[in-house]
Length: 360
Ligand code: ADP
Ligand code: MG
Image (cartoon, rainbow, N blue to C red):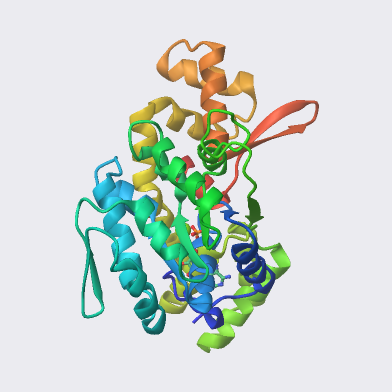
């Protein structure tokens, strides 16, 4: 169902995106590292899962979940557990084949078709064993959170990826990221201190739908659900929701339940609030100024001088270098972007739904 708000895993539940799915598939075959980039709720996890399901030889690791479940740090133990779960979820014939190789690794035990890692298992030995089979994909969803692995901002993990890149041609990594600048910083292929320095990767960007495509998506979803809705309401929703599939789906889902445009939009806002809760709290912990700057921009204070004035009226004097760092941070986390308009730099919250939530 197109308006099912859960992440999609099957192609028939995905609207459009044929090209993106093909690109991800080809990339996973041709490149040792693929990045899937795009703002929150644009459909990265869904597309990744569809590809993994269709290629049948990939394991999926939700790094954001690892990070939140373990109270902020990602331990070796939780990463091993995620690998273990991923391998146990492989489909049957492949699982049997892969386990033949894995059972020789120290610290791996297999009972029936369930594999178990002892704490001493080494991930590089696991990867070496997986490499003996034909191509296998290891996908890290919201991979920018890998910076919370180990004490060196994820570098120990990247050393493992670099080792696989250089020596294990059958292993292919996919990293997705909503916080695009942070993911680039983590991978750091142009940073000579990064373990992945100089390696090649392929980048695929998932963009929001155009307004026309959003309208088409909504129409199709309502036809599928057998619900009548006025054309103006579809157009208005497409206008408000910025082409972001996650919000379009949420709108459709709520409209079907309530048959009311206003309530459906309210439902989207409520969902967005809940979705943002964790991320905004995290941001606030790092500095309450992030939130203040987001609020300023959401209220239309979109230029440097205006943002600075707003901030200083609420939390006292702020040096220019500090404000610059906050604005750069928000851009790297893909909350805002900057463009030159009317002779000056203007900041904007990328997602119109998030903009509304923050303004309220
Ligand atoms: P991301 O991982 O980029 O944050 P998700 O894959 O979780 O985004 O997508 C958000 C929601 O939007 C999903 O739960 C899914 O229901 C829906 N969705 C995303 N892309 C599509 C699409 N092309 N067709 C139908 N639903 C989609
Ligand atoms: Mg996701």
